[in-house]
Length: 73
Image (cartoon, rainbow, N blue to C red):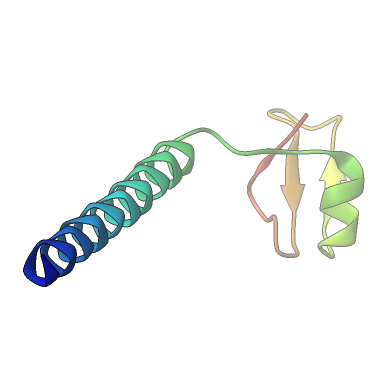
């Protein structure tokens, strides 16, 4: 009887650990997908990052700052 309880506890712990690993893998996969997407920033985000939104120039890019080279939307 005691062995059954211990065995049940071990199986339950292993199952919960497996769910944790599955969730971590799903979160990593979701992060990987968003990194490949093209990057757009708003004019205010460009300014907050220390850049200048060049909206009238060809391509509408943020010049300088942390968003340098990203397209302004």
